[in-house]
Image: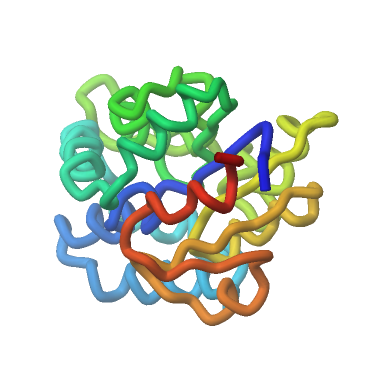
Amino acid sequence: MNFDIICFDCDSTLSKIEGIDELAGRVGLGDEMSKLTDAAMNGEVPLEAVYERRLSLIRPDQCSIDWLADLYIAEKVEGVKEVFAALLAQDKVVHIISGGLRQAILPLAKYLGLPEDHVHAVDIYFNKDGSYMDYDITSPLAKTGGKAVVVSSLKGQASIVMVGDGKTDLEAKQAGAYVLGFGGVVDRVIVRESADFYITEPSLFSVLEHIISR
C-alpha cells in the first residue's frame, strides 16, 4: 500500500522504552508504574484512569525529562533513522502521535528530521525551579480516544496509517486510518488480533514495504 501520511507512536515503537516507566524507575516506582502502563496499553483500563495517577506519583522534574529525552534516542529501535530518512526522501508527511510527554519526545523527533509541529504528545509544565507542576489535562492524548481525535485532524482526504504497539494506536481506526501493529518491542495480543496488519520483526525497517510503494 501507499499512504500519504504516516504516523508513529513513540514508546515501544520508535524507541524500545516506555518513557513513563523509566521515569518511575528513577524514583523507585518502576514495578507499580509498569503494571499500570501495561493495563492501559492492553486496553484493560482507560488511559485517563492511570495518566494523572502516574504523574502525580512520579512528579518528574525538568532534569528527569532531559534525561528521558536522551534515553529515547539512545534506545531507539533498530532501523528507525533509516525509515524516517526514506519516508522524508519520498516527501511523505510524517507525524509522531504519542501519549508520552512532549518535551521528552521533541529531541528524538529532531534527530529523525521532524519539525516540532509534527509531534503530538502531552505537554508537561514545571515550576521556575524546574520541579514538576502539572501536565496538560486538556490534551486528548491523555485520554481514551485521543489518537482518533489527532488522526482525524490530520487526515482530510489523505490516506493515513498509524504504526504502533498499543491499544491506543488502534483508536486511529475510528478516524479512518489503517493501523499497522508493531510487535518488535512488545507483542500485545489485542494489537496482533485487531490491527490491519501486524509485524514482529525487531527492526522498524520492516514497516516500509507495507506503507510505501517501491
